[in-house]
Image (cartoon, rainbow, N blue to C red; front, side):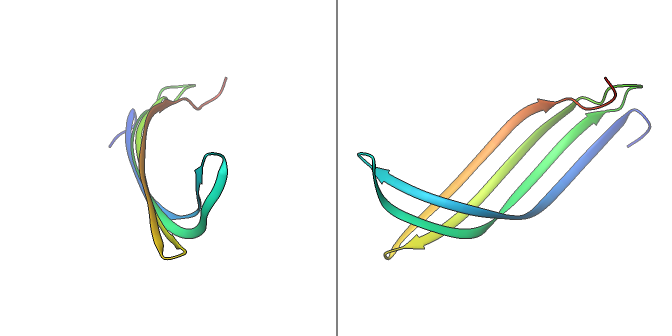
Length: 83
């Protein structure tokens, strides 16, 4: 966007391990490749670059005929730069 601001878009594959436990006993366990999507807005200052981000994770796997899925999201602020 300019010297002081950036918009960051990202997407890619993510390896997932999905486990379902009932009363401490493992009932279902499966792995799959899912997707991760990210959008961020970064402020570029002289020695610090705070970034506000939103991430979404999508995962789906099958075990013993049961389909398990996970859709989750994160919202946060990250800091990077020279300290």
